[in-house]
Image (cartoon, rainbow, N blue to C red; front, side, top):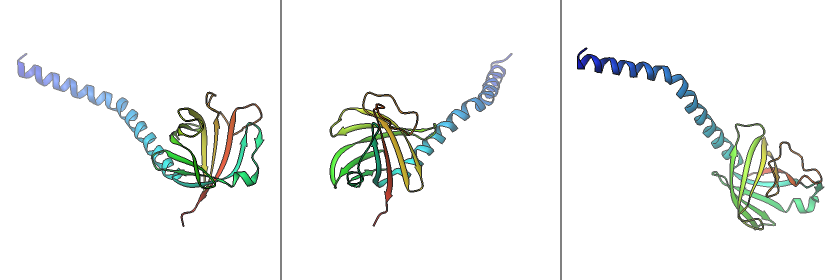
Length: 164
């Protein structure tokens, strides 16, 4: 076999290998693209101001007068601020995964009582309502939307505040 023939055969073999591997490689890239698209979509859905309408902490419902004092402002890239009566009481960032069931959210707290800690939670968005159930720092991620006594969980229901 000549050098030219060997090169042609080698390139042909590489071409066949690429064609054979393409179906294996392509779905992984597509799955990653799909996850990134889902994350962007949910970040856009979360972006904005949300008013707390119900909160349960470790089996104890928070009174309606206190709940209505709480809002959260959420940025497009996962940054958030919690406000009580308009005063900034906590800030941080969140990482979401909307491709799993239930959807997961991790809160990294950068300002406030638990600064430097991360809490793990789940979330869902239905129309103008968002539910978040997250564990106290150091506790495992909830598997469902409940915050019964002794659970170490907080269940919050928010309603979107429309821009004026």
